[in-house]
Image (cartoon, rainbow, N blue to C red; front, side):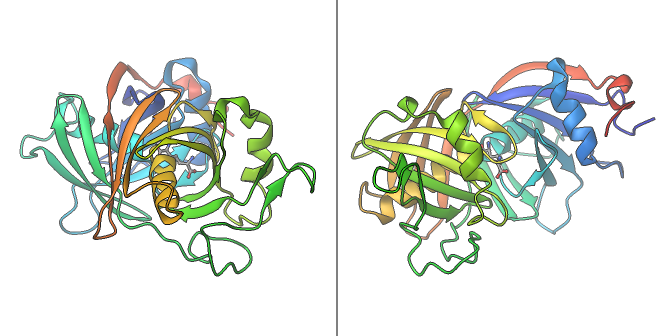
Length: 295
Ligand SMILES: N[C@@H](CCC[C@H](N)C(=O)O)C(=O)O
């Protein structure tokens, strides 16, 4: 039987991004990609991202997180999921540890993120520094300036989208700035082509963004490994960094996504701070049958 059978999980969302939190601290259990896919496919535990907690690895951290997309692939960062994890680690009766205060340091394969509670159901996450060099994003060919990279989709003389910014926020992002409502683009059709474009050797999260005011951005996101989403925290961060580098905004903005709003600030010390809500939807236990055909 899978070591995940009967494990309790929380179903949450962060600004509409569907998140499942699974606490494996205190055990050696690991989630295999096929098990993540099986959990995602069950309506009771479906998610955009599965956030799995493991015992801390580095001194000074509270937990190690592994982050799974619906296709079983792993991500180095998930902003909305990190807020949900903070809520679970601080407030959930079964997951909270008495010694923990209103701040946490969480670690992923991509590095550390600090989380601070700002109200009962809202948290600020320090997402760390963006990586902006072409080989850090990564791109498959050199671009000295990643504020605009050479990439377009559609007819050569009349592209549908072109010249995105590329940013790594713990995961790779391409952000296309447009001057009309991002909802008017067929992202469900365009997204998969761009996600898997040869320019992105690790694939990429694809965003369409419109700067509507000096501190306001409307955003729609096609997520690597998960598809269309109601909200993506790292995409909101990548978009604010990209818009700021292009002098479209200052260093902060309210980012409006279909599922809710996030506030992002790119501080002078280069750290990107993202603030947004969390909501607890349900709790449940993983049915053993889920894993009988996990492949
Ligand atoms: N929704 C997340 C980001 C999820 C990871 C992404 N699909 C990837 O594979 O990089 C967020 O809120 O940041």
